[in-house]
Image 1 (cartoon, rainbow, N blue to C red):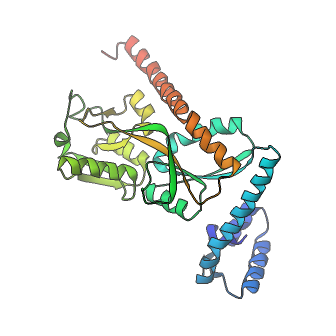
Image 2: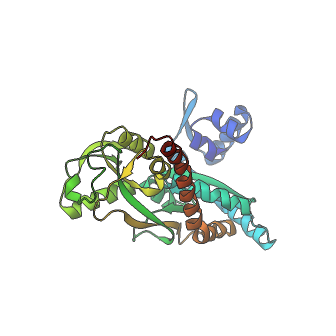
Image 3: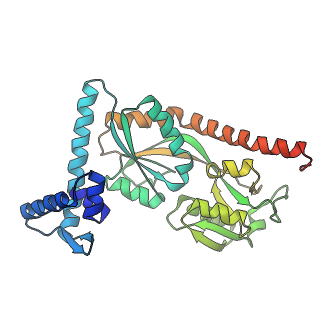
Length: 314
């Protein structure tokens, strides 16, 4: 109850999550405060915030809950049962592929419950370091981090533009050709932002930033609206490309081919459910992504074929 209340910022929301009454949450929190000898929350109207003592306790409380879950999974493994809970962190760019992989995974392992968290590259790396997530799907993490990173699928990044953009019909481009174009880009801390900045740095140009956002969906909408061009993961735009809502620009050096990694802390115990999901990503991740991309192409081929028969194309 303490952890849930701290994360919810409200005893009432914590009660809803735990399916108990707000009075029960308040009573339990008072008991913990009496035992610890500190006020753990500051009450501000209907909201609560952690005191310094509450903040100090929160990390240990999470460790206690995680240890209990790990013990449960270890005992289940001895019984030959594949089950338990995995907290999976994912960079937001991977939200276009991760749910599809998890759907297949839970079809094979229905006993495993997934708690899925999204954030940018820095947020997920920090959560992994704090032990708040068991595994993470992201690009290559910092080499100095106490983690192991295993590649499981290719990850191409491209430069996109609206179909009527002045460069959309160009047969070939170099980075200098886009130097004056407005760039729609992700926020600082994003892996995609870092990739864009590195490409411009290597080419000796300064990007002309037209808009910054923390949303890939906003980037796509801005590009389709003609606000500018963007560097983006190819995995985020499969359907839009198939429907010709945007195009990729043939810029020299793109697509940039990287990898998706499944990442975990070396010091965290590898519980059966964690290992099961990691192995599934390694063995099936690329296959699921390939099938997803093929589905987008088929979806786009239908409208294109109908338009061609009606004389709307070519």
